[in-house]
Image 1 (cartoon, helix red, strand yellow):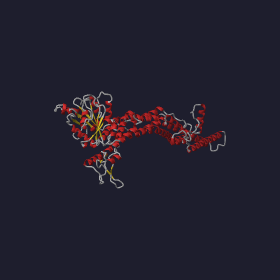
Image 2 (cartoon, helix red, strand yellow):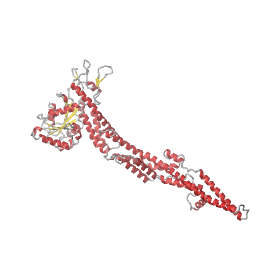
Image 3 (cartoon, rainbow, N blue to C red):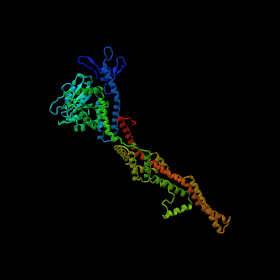
Image 4 (cartoon, helix red, strand yellow):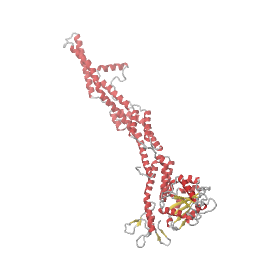
Length: 623
């Protein structure tokens, strides 16, 4: 309770709340009890007496302790509200606005309530027509403030009663937020100090036939800190009361009072029977009951007309107001309700949780991308091309002549003569779009497995958005592999591949070719000597020399070609694997940039919002 100044200038203060030393050596000033209280309010809470000491008695010391404990209890709620605000911000572009509407409303109402002083506790008195709530309101106030009578409905606008000093205006902001008109605001002197700071609001009937009354009740029930539900022996089991109000507000049990009014109309031996039935109905509504020291709703039997049981309700309200935790409990319950309704879109009850983008899913996606660009077929083609070039370079001259002759006749292979090294490599294989689509679909399904439905859809959409232009990009990048400078290729890997597009020519091919020509020379020399011998020439060396030379050259050429073919298998396989690896690396790079990274970003965002959800639900970031 803040300090106030009378008209005669006398200062009233509520004692020491918290001390803070002044740098000039003067008397210490009280620090703000909580983030809800501004500095001006804190300074007004205590004034120094003439001797420099701070005034205040034992009750004020107790009040200071309550403030300090409440300030410490606010930290978890503050952290939960921060997490919920972060959660809504991260999810706004991923979820429907209607899904986040309730959480947004809770954040707005919590921010509005935290801007007001927590010194006051707003308690609504709600009930059905004829339940006697206005009579109970007047009985608690001790004066006739709210109109009562037989005419229904009696209360047409909310009536507020503030248990505070008449010169204090600290509750005006709270009453403005509740929409209580100035003409319906009353202030009473607190006969019981425990009621200091209590703001009691008499609501219209929730079942009123008058237009606008139910809307007023529904609006105010979302703004007050606590609610006193007044029922009677005839309507305590009313379906509207339980299904429309008590059941949805079951999570607000700690700030809920359910009173059975007009017990003076019941025989004494049936009061407990009706109360037991009322407790049973509340239990079926899911509302915890505050019995045996457990936190929960307070259930009382009273008679506003005779005053029976009203003192017990007054003590309960005084205890609630003196602790100054009703607003925190109400906001915490609101956050619990909002988080519970958001659970289906953030959490899935699975044994192992979402798998996410696993290493196996990545490898499977890369394998399918490689198959889509034909990396394996391109490697095999490159291997065969290398072998053919080796055979052409190391084959016998007679075999080259035969291939040339067959090519001239159109019976040989299309490339009978040695093709240009980069000619076949420059042909860009077409990307298999069905294989690529299957790769994206499988990756999206595996990455979104175990996620809540909205986030699974978000992951799948991210994958398909990236895959829209991927086939064309891959075709252009693969075609760029044949460029000398790598123009049109994607990334450093593609540029390196472009530089290597021209097929290398090992030196031993040249040596083998020279050896083949040497074998041809030996054959021709042997043939010349043999012809010269048959023509009557000198025949030096006899017949065996030309026959040996001719046979050696004829057999040595094919034998050398066969050895070169065997020797070329290893390098050809390495060349084919290098070609396959280049294509695979190219496809992986594009797939990672266009599909994997967007999917990973969505999964990371879900992980962040899930952590914030756990904090908002009252857990920790590691839960």
